[in-house]
Image 1 (tube, rainbow, N blue to C red):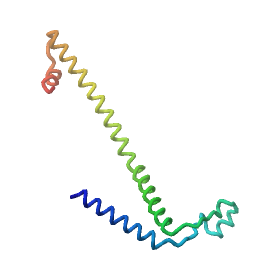
Image 2: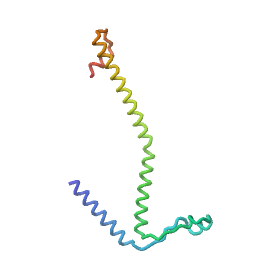
Image 3: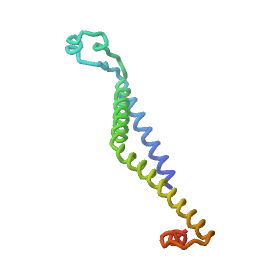
Image 4: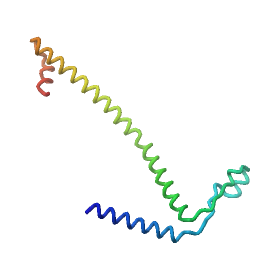
Length: 126
């Protein structure tokens, strides 16, 4: 059921995007800077312009907005990823320490040495 809803949504989205593209085929001029500012700067790249269909400008704006949003979110979540990395290192260190203690318990039990309460509790939990 969910699969069919997803397919239906994608088909409807494609129809809407195609309709927008067909309705906005007229070319528009996209400029890097306004003419007054470009002449003030005085370089050739500042006066850059290109004629594009309006639907390309609309879809390009949507894609640019998505990319900026993804990048912003990735930067915002950096502290969470760093915390997860730190916690996973801590878990590995603790697992290594537990395995070391378990091996000491097994060695102590094999030799017949007096039992330590902590080591005995660790061996029972395993």
